[in-house]
Each structure stands twice: as structure tokens, then as C-alpha cells.
Length: 183
Image (cartoon, rainbow, N blue to C red; front, side, top):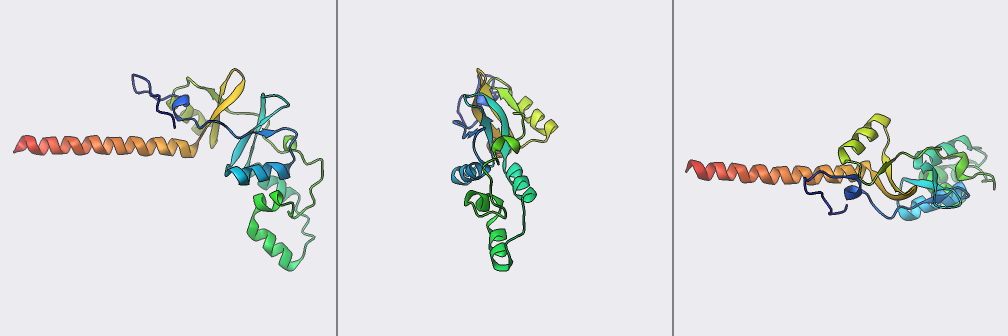
């Protein structure tokens, strides 16, 4: 979270966004995407075309749908149980999923072909309203048609925590001042 609050203390997207953003190429396989998600400990990433332009977003949910739709259940007993305990991301990333990945299983086939984004100057209140309205967990911050940051629901919880901490401190100070005034 950046410390560039505006003079009027209104937060904007650029004050909360996390940057740089981990991205996925539209040419990547689902196995490669799952590996990136695991290695970087992320749950979603913008998908970029050959250049730097975003063409969609891939999430853990998309990867889970991919795995579910490709379950062949051909492995038996012990192997299947072990795969189940690993989870979809791990099994795909390690190339030991319930199915054999084909070279045609590209990110573009499983991603959401829309990127929910805001500009850096967007007031944080608008960002929150948009995320609630669209029921999304993350929004990307763009500038000059490129992705420069991401704001997740967890980032918003951090802002809420700081706000509550600040208010609690102010209220504590007020109650102490009121006690001293009564004496």
C-alpha cells in the first residue's frame, strides 16, 4: 500500500494498489499458469496478448474449472487419493493432474475475456462500489492501456484495518480528554 494520500485524505486506487503485477501470457499453457500462481502465491492475474495489452483475467477458479472439466478418473485408488489431497493448482502445475494436458490447453480458452479495471485516480470508494456491484475479488489499475497495479479484497481489508485502528486511537484520545476535563 502506498503512502501517497491526497491532501483531503481521500484515498485513490494508486494509494492502495499493489505493484508490479504478475501477469500471464495468452500463449501460456494452463500448467504454466498454475505454476506461476503457486510460485508467486497469487489467486488471479491479468492475461496479456503478445504485447503489454490485457485481454482478460485468469483466476484460481478458472483453473479449478479447467481441472474439473478434464477429470478422466482413469487413475485408480491410491494415486487418485494422493492427487485429490494436492489440489487442482498443484496437480496441474506438476503435470500430474487427473488428465493429460494437451498442447492445446491454453490460458485463452479458460480465462475470463474481460478485465475489470480502474484508473489510478479513481477514488477508492468507487473502486469498492464497483467490486461489490460486479461481485469480483480483484480489480486491476491501468494507465496508458497497460496494467500498473492490482487491488484485491484483501488489500481493502488492510485499509479497513488501518482506518479502524486510527478511529479507535482517536476515540481513545477523546475519552481520555473528556475524563481529564471532568476532573
